[in-house]
Image (cartoon, rainbow, N blue to C red):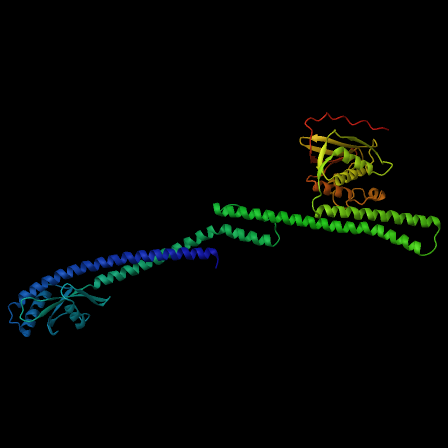
Length: 483
């Protein structure tokens, strides 16, 4: 059963109980008041009749026949006078009925029970269609015990009580029907936000992660809708992240497989050539050189992959204050000789950052090699360190061919090459910037790349200062490149 139906039934039940209890109490009070009025009238009438009968019997000899004749004459005079609604009987002490005009609804047992109950007691007998109030009292001044038993017709009171019950039942049914309809509409309106939430939940479970619930329906439902929308947003963000991660992993596996396939095919081909028989010296040298070159590229690729995996999945690297000038010197010493380009560096004395020296030097080295491969027009690559508040910004800039805008968002992905032919020609694998981005992330910062085709590229990151001096000397302009 739905919540709306439960709410409707609960409201209908509550209303039904309220109306029933209120109506029963009201009708019961009216009926009780009507019976009290009838009982008071009956008691007064009975008292008058008792006095009249006592006076009538005072002139008789007390014989049963005389008493019956006297009472019969009195009753006939009452009927002639138009009296109705009251009947009586006279009984002696042994229970013998000397005279009676009581209806059959008032049985002898009821009459004798009223006698036994004593004066002032009232007894109801008969049915709802023929109801009587019975009273009994002893007749005074007689030689023998005589009792006057009076019957007062209260059928009208019981009939009115039944009529009121039937009328109220009809009114209650009509009111309950209207109330159930109103409660159903109210419950439908109250649960409408819940139905929207249910529909949105089903859509979300079916994969529609952009599904949201419009706010509304009161404060509680608005908070519930906000909570659902927040949850749905978090689920969508997580699913988007998982989708991107899965796509990135698929691209990584495809690129890695492709990167392995080419050198392995070449190595196997030349190795098979060497083992197929004696070859001329120049052919043997060419095959050996190619095998060595591709093996070295595979070795570099595996080392870079291990470093990248260690940064992404291993513990954070140990860091301590390091002079930036020393990191620059380590990176420059690791460049191949002769240097592919002239490196113009600028670093304020005393500049120090909290870093892992070996990793940060490897980052600078990779950036310098990438900048050199961009064929800068002036033959120079600029390596600078500049203060930015309480941070040091390390920048590698060139005036080379730049990176196309479409490639710029992807250059830090593993194996991504903006110019595949040039990169492979110089032995590159597309892992350099990926490794640099991972090293920057391990230091709690990010790698920023700004490039314009034909005008050059600048790559920079910012690190917190360690032991920043109180006053920094003014930065010097980059010295001009030597031709």
